[in-house]
Length: 528
Image (cartoon, rainbow, N blue to C red; front, top):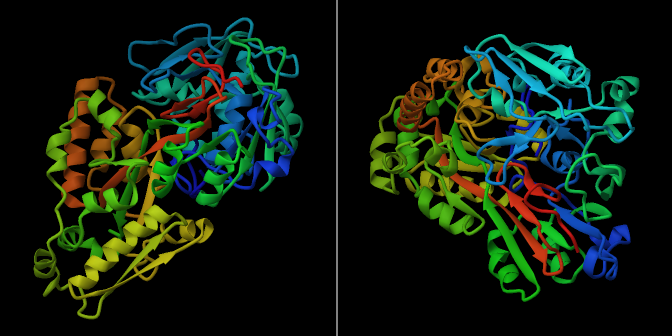
């Protein structure tokens, strides 16, 4: 995804385009199209249509989903997420991490067989470099790792992470990718275009906007060995074209099934839909820095101008589900949050109530024109239009402007009401409530991922991430989220599914709630 920000996103990033995955172009361009395996029945080469084209492949700096989808097949982390996305399991690590009593020190031992694709062993020095470089180089990924004071090389196969403070969700930070220090330091630019890792596939070739190709690493140190000989990723941005490319057999797999085409794909005899609810959060946000929407009463009035339930039903289902808080249902249920209580906070449409709250409010000029900006995504644009229509029903003007990503990202964090009063965005994260609250609502994060400038729950969010006790953290998050929902700097909207159209000759393709999909893992190994 990269909906880039000023700093600190890493793999907790904005959801670009439609879901947690992306691409463009036709498989025919690659010469691999035409039947099983994209190669007339070869059975070893798979073509997959993404929603957007990747742009870079160095894990130290990359911050977009299409690039990460490809890079994740080439590089590995100390740990990765289990099939359900609810816990981590060893990947390069030999076993579970060990932590000291106050949670400020974590020790990880490497698998003695772990090897990079250039033949070098994976060492603790590579681990140290991979975790420290994003902060030292002041990359956009720095905030993901800046709780680490330093990484200590205990011996060649043991790394110790010394934290600046107890950081409750640190376990999942250990999924960060490990790369060979010597190779990247030799030529960082070359590494960004031709990465070397320890994963089951080697990077082969790519042309931006056309294709990216990875090839099976026959000397892969891990288990299982990949079944596929080659995978080619092709970007197909236009939804109808993307769906057509799988119904005709030009592509073996496509990602993100659009709502209006879901039934068509589901009805194809030789195609199945592989789906799982993603770990994501889409929302309508208000400018709480300056302008009419700094007023809590104005935000509540706008909540009355439309029905979010109806908007999600009209424009998102069945490719997504209604969400009533920043936490995906999987996370909220795991933390036993009061989901039913939160469902009762948003209003249904009531134009009379909206008018009563807006008319006579000193912060709302009689000639106010609400400005809503949206990124280049149909679902989020439709949400913006729905809100604008409701505001006009209430007697005021509103306009919706669809911006390309670059313009949107420059504009939505300005805090200037002439740039926006509202915007729509999405967020992809992992398994801890901190992933969905800190980057939006903690004042110390400097608002790098949020243009609301709402800091009323900042202290609770910061304290919760530094508190080891889960029950205490739960209480803090529950209170903070309830306050946020009642204050309405965000109106939670929906969560998308990671959804894929898969030809019937593709076996064991698995959608994943965090990592988008898996080609080779303990629970699946894609073959044709």
